[in-house]
Image (cartoon, rainbow, N blue to C red; front, side, top):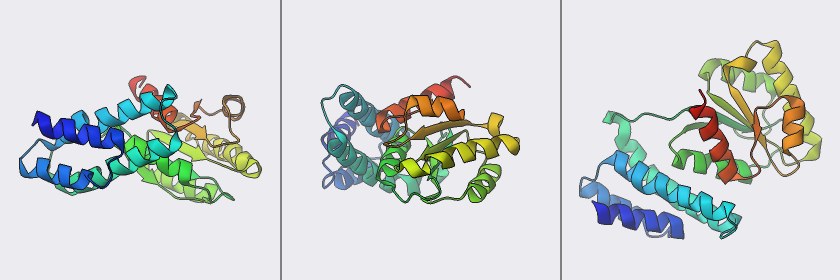
Length: 213
């Protein structure tokens, strides 16, 4: 089992996206526990990738390739999890706010969060406050992640925060914001619970939210 986990972990860290599917298939055929594949190989690998990124040893392109590699492996495992006792670490809604159609950063954060064991619902881009509120009421997530790449759409994040408050939903979840024009000062100003400057920091923020519950 150890060899399989080591090979998969190395493939994710190194971004060997062409090899990962065969490695995961081989591990599954050898009856390696699916939870071990996820926790000891996939999540462990993305933790290393996150640390490398935070230390400046790798940059966004390398982190993106690792995340894509991890997602390819997870996509093979997920259909087999139906009968397994797998516990999600928390549910997160992610979206890009109304007026903004950028999603590369958001998608990278989602892949990193899924790799860290969280259930992520991606509501896409250019999302109206009305639709978002409806989904929050329906899904009851632990965390809401808002993304914006345009300075002109940053006020929409404030609109979301105000609407969550007026609907009595603000205290039911944590809200994190991110995107190129956003910073910690803006996050504090609109009443968000945190700001993730990149995917690795977003994962750390989510873990902090969950561990504080």
